[in-house]
Amino acid sequence: MEERIYLSMLLSTYGSLLTEKQVNVMRLYYDDDLSMPEIAELNNTTRQAIHDLIKRCHKMLLNYENKLKLVEKYKRNEDIKKDIKDKLYILKDKIQDKDNVQLIDEIEKDINSFSI
Image (cartoon, rainbow, N blue to C red; front, top):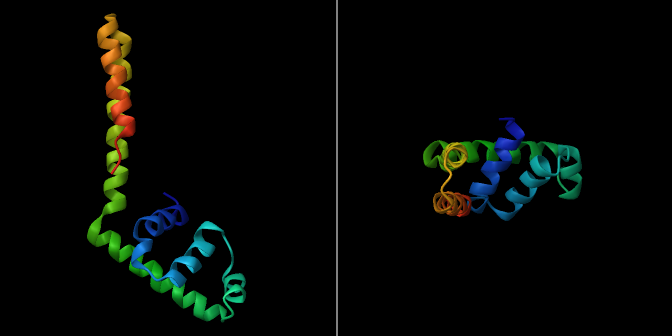
């Protein structure tokens, strides 16, 4: 996975553990794709201060993920959901009984509504 996307996912997951300023700067950098000088100007500070803040937050987010593994678990669960749905599609194609097809549709709906 591209690092920017991964960091954006980490920020979405663990952003509440950062300060408001840290979240704002990280969102500007990772989500809005602003440069460090642009962010520094918006925050009335230096590029170096923004660089240091981004590096510190980057390290913090990776540390949270290394300990809690929430993004990893989310991705794994999404893969499992996809695998189950793929198997249901195969099963649905092989059966003819209307009631069983309806049951498979209900199971698929339940899987789609499942989130962590």
